[in-house]
Image: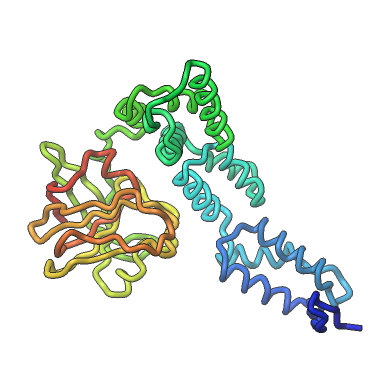
Length: 330
């Protein structure tokens, strides 16, 4: 019989075996719903073939199907890998967990090595985890005798190592005396602020097709220069930085408004953590939603009406000392 019984006793029709067309339809449906790698797509299709079988005489040409999807841009291992690595780092996971996740997704060795987090990214991810878990300088004052404190210290070190961090990085975070010391240690491995003079300039952005213009943030005696995409249409503002997996240190996007209304933004379909900077009618920053959570549907609001909203890589404002009251011009 083609039917099988469910636990309730009702008959459930068994899915038809796959042919070449149905197999490709399954693949299209999968990549439309999920961000994926070629390896993960292959694993999914192999599972479906085991479950349903294949009607045609020869084995299905999975290699050919995957090659076609890569050529069409439906599957991009580099983009997937960058997004996955960035998401894990933003959640506080270390380089070893990133490597394990990319290996499990079938990312090739050379690409995994190219996507390996640098020292600055490793330190920042460790800081994120410490802040989330209240480790190191973020912890409450220790209680108990010396032995109890030693065991707690070892337990926190082990938690950071399990999250993929190198032992030396974990120890440095756990034993930091205060938050300022830890942030300075992270900043040491970041790109020097003096490099801001090398901000890129281009007429049109190669991904979005939007115009790119210079933008300057004046913070005290410092002037920070960026090349930003201008989202000046309803469609461009609705899309924003959705689905983008990279944003350079001196890149961003500006959303111009007329300065008469407050605005709210969200992170739908956005894999990057962002600093969302609201610029008031006087061209000065009114408030900053820093290091927003990727993919979050929770809105973040401006304080009062805005002339523009500037989006930078998450954490960039803090790195450069950009804060409310600074002047923004574009």
